[in-house]
Structures are given as structure tokens and as C-alpha cells.
Image (cartoon, one colour):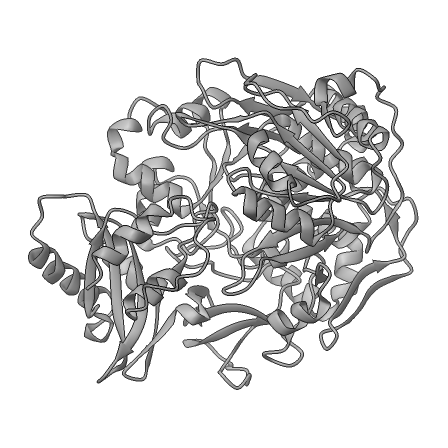
Length: 630
């Protein structure tokens, strides 16, 4: 796997990857273990869409994550597992131990009726068995569908039904901060309307009392005692399904995004090595949940493909206090730290006194993922956590892309706060206008599309290929439409301005929500904000801002005037919010994304039909926002 070592080398490699993409990706793929080499590197068109990489190649991704490392890394730590409570004993898994556990659980799955192609739902907290279960599915060719352990029974049952899961792997309960969550009870409720599920395999995490349905429910520990660690890896076609991961659409039911074995393996490993500039024996920590794409790609698959040692954390950033992340970094001497802007802002608002007890001198690279990071949070992260010495890789990508598409390379690409900077090799972004015409040159803005396939892109939406076409390929012919707006500045750097439906048109000016939010968040008393457009008699669209203020004694009119001055200073008078509502919280999904469609409806005065809010972290904030609407 080629690793870029300088910016000049990046430019050379990027040019080569665009001019000879098949040769470029074949070279990257050669470094893996293939049971049979591919006949053709790429077969594609975006009209159907049809995307096939490494056609007729045979492999098993777990051989590349685990078995091939054993000669050199058998005793190296694969995962340091840090439990929710700092008083509980941490657990380490070496590569040898992980390989054995994966093979044993793969045999458990087979004993319980799973076979190649079957779908297995995994609904668990962040415990080591979650990673083991994913890899065990991949070992035998079963398709894993991980559902985040905070989703409701209704959301869980919908996902189980959509892909017709046969087995559910879960836990008795979960610890999350100060909360005990009855995971198995939620599963039981979900399965009342999921008759296709034949087996439920339960990990005992909290030792709380649970109901076990005879003939259906079995304990992980009992099943593991019945098997050995001999499980040959199932030969998989490069285009066989690896996993399904559901992502919310702006409307309608969640989409089951499908990723396949070969291209996903090659691309996630390549991006991990190059974006983080990973060095052998470094300790890496991604704070995401494996229930999201970030956890799939950059907690499980890519780090193991690279032979890395990773931290996996069960809890939340603020438990038992807001110094927990920093304590863990010092404990494990973490070198690479990858987290979300939501977490960064929350920890910033908690105060710097939570950071001071910790050295953080092991850190070499910082990363950001999940949403565009605002400039104020970027600067805080840089100064307080990186001490001005750690490059920040602000990575832009999606569930559908499988891996990072636009990002700095750590220490190689010159960074700018709030800019994702430049495309990675093999990624060909274009900015188009509303009619799909490419806008060339720098200093431009429009909708972000990709004009050539990359190996880890989605292949379909499970059971509904037409939906895949309509969502991603129908808007602009022969282009993958990301759904995001984007600016390309005078240096050719890309800045994501937010979802296209989050781009506001104020008096004919296109203004990105992320840009306005970044300006508002510069105010010393604002910890977070969300802005949406609403109908305006004069401007076409006005700007409605929801803000979380840390100073509860602040006069609202004074706050409003100061925010208007800040936005005017940062962007211009055209971007000043017309309405500013102070709120205690924002409606967020469990991945940390703000559900702006709810805020948009409230701003428009439509409060009776807000759609499904059950998947929010805290649905009660919606009622409070409605009651305080301006």
C-alpha cells in the first residue's frame, strides 16, 4: 500500500490516480491477500447505477484484518477496551486473541443457523463483542447490519424487517454515562413484529435480569463453550455484500446502504494510512460508535487492515466528568485522536480546567468527522488539545462513500480552519450549478458531485435499487450527487457548506448554514447554534437561528445585537439572522447531526406535523423549542 510522504508526492499520486485509476487502485489492491485475483479492475456506469471493482476477485476481509498479521503481530494489542466506568477493569485483546474469538463466534453463528448471504442484526453497546460479531459475520459471509444501541424498538424492528434478518446479536443491557439501558428489553419489544428472527444471541454485560425465550434466545458465553477456534475464511466475491448500514433520509424510511467486500477493503485501508499518516505501533483512537459508518470503517476494518492498535471506549465524553477523553489519551498514550465537532464543542463548553490535569503529549494527529467543524471549535481543538503542534484532519465523507473523500493528509496538506481541503487520490469532485453544469475554476460555489467511482462507494440501497438511483444518480446525469453544497476557494480548497436543502437563498445570495453557525458560535456565550431558512416576504428566505447560550443571565436583546454584529463581522450584513431563539438543546440524532427539517418546520410555523422524532437523543427538546418559537 503506497503511502504519500510529501505534498509534491500527493500531487503526483493524485494526477496518476485520475489519469490511470484502474492501474492506481490495482497497485493498492496487490498488497492484500486474495484467494483469486480479479479479472477486471473496474466495470461501471452511473446510469443504472452499476459499480463493480476487482471483478471476479475472491477474498475474505477477515484474513486481511487478522490472519495475515499473526506471524508478526500475534502478541500486539488490537484493541484496548476502556469501559464506561473508570473504576471497572479495562480489557486488552491481542491480534491472536481477537482472531481466535472471531473464529469461535463465527462457528457459533453457523451452529445457530447462519450461512453465507444471511443477514445478521447486531444491536449492542460499545463492547469488544460488537467488533468480534461484525468480523465473525464477515468470516462466514453473513451480512452484518449494525443498528446503533440507542435506537428505539420501533427503529430497530424496521431495520430488522427491511433486510429480513435471521439472527440478532445483542446484550442484556448497557452502561452509558450514568444510565443503565435495558438493551434486551428493547430487542424483545422489537421482535414482537419480526417473526423471521430465529435466534437471539445475548452477551451478559450488566448481569441484569432478562427474559430468555426458550428455543430462540441463547447466551454468548454458553455458545462459545461449544465451539473451537478453527473456522476457515469463506471465499467471497469482491462484489459480495459485506454489510448494510441504514442512514436516515430527509423523508421516508431509512435507506439500507450496501457496501461490498473488495473495494471497501482497499479504499478504507488506503485512506486510513494516508489521511492519518499512520505509523507502525502507534495507538489510534476513534471515539465514534460502531453503529455508524465511522465506526465500521475507522474503528473496525481500516485499523485492523493496517495492523494498528486501537482504543475502543464504551462511554460518553463527559462521564464521570468532562476530562474523561483526556484521561484516556494519557492512559493509553494515544497518538491519533479522531472525534466529532459535537464532542469538541461540548468539551469546550465544559471548561479548560478539565484539560489541565492531563499532559496530552503523546498526541501527534487530531481528526474531525461527522459534520463541518466551525472555525471557533477548530481553533479551540488546535490550541487546547493539540497544543498547536498536531495537524487537524477535517475529514469529509458519508455513509454512502464508505471512506473519507476530501481531507488533509496529516502534516502534509496545509490546513485551513473549517476547510476539508483537497480530494484524496482517486476522488474526482466537481462543483455544479442547479442545472448540473460544471462550474470550473476557483473561488466558486455550487453543489458537490463526484464524476468517477471510487472503490468504497455504495453499490445500492438494499432491496430498492431504484431508490439508490433516485437519491444519488438521478439529479445530475453521470454524476454521484452528494447532497452537499460546497465552496472551492482561491487555493482550490473545498469547504462543505452543508446539505443543499440547508443552503439558504437570501435576497439572491446563497448562504450556507454551516457558515452562519460558525460565525454565531464565535460569540463567547454561544456554545452551539443551528440556522435554517424560513419564508420571508422581502428576501424570499430569512434566517432563523436557534442558539444555546451558556450565560443564563444574559439579556436576550443584548445577546441578539451582539450575535448580529458577530455575523456581520464574519460574513456580512446579508447573513444576519432575522430571528434568534435561545434554546436549551437542539434536536440531534444519535450520531450528533442536527435534524434541521424539524427546526425548519418550526421556523415556518408548522408545529403540528413534525414527523418521526423517536430517533432523537432527546425528543423532549422539540416541545420546548415549539413553545418558545418566535
